[in-house]
Image (cartoon, rainbow, N blue to C red):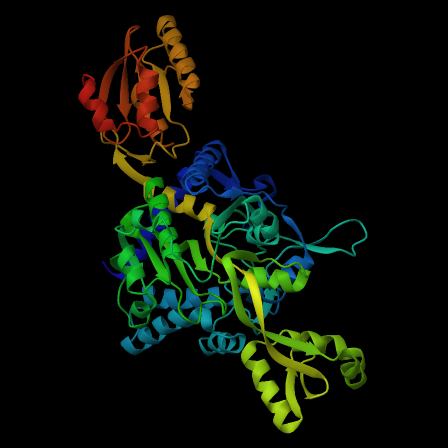
Length: 621
């Protein structure tokens, strides 16, 4: 099949999925009667139920299993917090404007669309040109504003809607700005992630945990990003649900006591070296990936394994799930290692979970900005003699030399690392003065020997004080749910073969409704039995839909298959009923008083459908 046909098939499949999702109210564009707003969606009843089930399973799989501390922090965040985290200065995408209409576009998206379009639809493309376009797609995330602008001009890319010329790319901050209080003097932002709420609470959470490491804190909540030109439906939105974990660990010991439980799991991994050398993703046991140093440490490897189990149990196809390691140029300067769980859907490979070892960056940044030490302590069994670096600025001499800038110079001297301080000490002893760069002043100053004393002293210490490292798995819940919709969707012919019926093969775990109850015909006795079964289902906590319309049973099955309901109970007598399984369409006969507990045990995963097929007589319709 050629690339153009493949692209057409993907588009047709996506359209079928999206039409079904919108028609059955899984989700719809927000403010639809006012023609909607790009990047904002409402979840309807089945969508809310799927989301609620996914989050309930996330809590069970992570928060309960790992004994995490769950918090819930505000969405509105003071500017100083996001200044410390780097979001105010660096949370940007490159934007271009239509020079006539002022419409904004994401520069990298325009270039990406151009390259993909050429590769998929241009039959006259030379091998050389195709290789060049593939290379552009591979390095897209690395291009500076100047390089991106040059490529857009070089390929003659114009505004998609009007074909007008575009401005040069420039950075646009993606945070929604607001002000806290009526004066407007206290600037804030809608949080772009939930993580900062956990970091700023580290001191209290550490105390709550009995001053013990490691421990993890978790948060589920809304995050906001003012996307430049949102598209791709639920995959790129302006308000979305994140579920994030911050696992705090001693930087000198990143082993994990439960790593052996996931070590034998084998799944598609895409290490940095394979990406650079053009090889495909390959199956690697996570235990081997850690032993061989492909994954930086056991705790990171443990969470990669747990994320794999979480996604596959939800119903994500394990053959269309891979873990891709960030390339060196994608990694934040402070990160020790970072992997994305990517799921393949009709839009290509989509990042749905990021699992990063962020070192001690976040806690250090908030310590520096707030002046509150976000640190952990390890008590020694007996006191240790250690050599400590002591830097003592002479404030009087520094005041005379630097006047109003004295404080910044003092802070910079006190913040010196051991290597830099010992070099300065040697230079001061031989030359009497040393050159010293003060970052906050953005200039080099001369420090004389009478301005600072640097020495090493032996001290007895009873504890080690350190800033913990953090391993952060971060889940985009909307993206996971959309990929789950695509992975669960299929069509099959109706009984008489004249039409294709849509089905979602959701596992009972995530299905929006677990079962339906139908009286076979409109008859008072059957309807009473249906209502008593409904009451029994409510008692055992199973969501159901009762349908006493006179529609044919086949049509009723088709309607609920389209909602992904795994089981249907049909009342065709007052003593026993049939239970139909959605995908196999097999039916068993069960006594009325047992049916709720049978559905409950299969829905909860205590038994499989195959198990109950053994125990109950098969019913042939």
